[in-house]
Image (cartoon, rainbow, N blue to C red):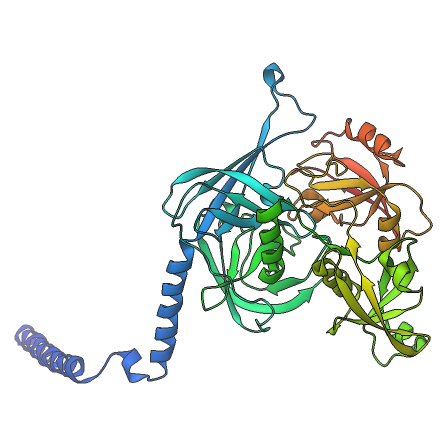
Length: 470
């Protein structure tokens, strides 16, 4: 009896299971035929999906104009087997800006390369030649042979707003045509020590080594910036990237294509930023403008009547926020341009007209100026003998001679170690540096493996830094 009862209970339970399964199956069929997909039941999802698809289509179109740049450079003062110079390889990114093969990228990617190779979106590799380079803005132009190439259209970086969405495309760590998405975090970033003329767009779109020279584009698929550097304590992405605004890069690019060099206006003054304390002392309501700290003899500034203590507030109607803004506007005005300066002198507003000269010691040619020297490409910085104009501009009025750092390559040991353009080298490996001859003599003994100990000076003080190639 017990066994039979157990069998009946099992059979009864199985019958119950079958009925339950049949019921659930019917409900499932009913749900499948009457209930819409989850996204369809949420009306707000449709715009999000459409926006995502639209962004993907935009990226697919833009990617075709982005290239992977491979470079090789002979190492200085290094000999390999059979006395051949070893070559150092590097990579970066660029954007095709003209259908006949002109490509916009960074100076620190291609400016000192002996060999440049461009890989297109379809994988084809072509040799490229350097058309011109401008270390002052870290912009270069190279060219490959071809016609009807996909062109990345240029936008207007002046009109892009903080908070707008942007897309960065490049080749971080050699990963071709990587796409990242973010926003414009800030505009007008200066004083970063990356280039001589700075007006960076800051973005949180992920940028890593290899992205340099690649485009930052808006949601219309137009380039608004040239990705140039990252702020990083680890060498990788930490949420802060910098791009040269396309309006600045476009002007440099056009001049490099047309003439191979960049013409910049020059005023001939020493300047510094205003502070709240200085603004109060000079009778100003706001700490804006650029304070003239000195006027060089025989310059446009002296001829126009500028004086030490003048506070320049506007140039041709454009507001001067700080000294870097004044320098950029003067440079963009070009040589022989006549500009009106609105300023305050002894608390009295006035306007002076100035005809600018050509900026001395032009460094925007295809071949790097011979006065700029690099002790080692691996360390990533270049130097030049101090000139009176540089001493005035950098705040070294009491120093008559010396060696000043003119450029620091982003993501290099020099940059990561704290070197910035404008610092003066006082010692190198405990040897005093007072001239280019001293520098060259000390540079010959540099070992990138052992590193170099530098004593650096700025208007704010001195510090030691130790640099070593990775």
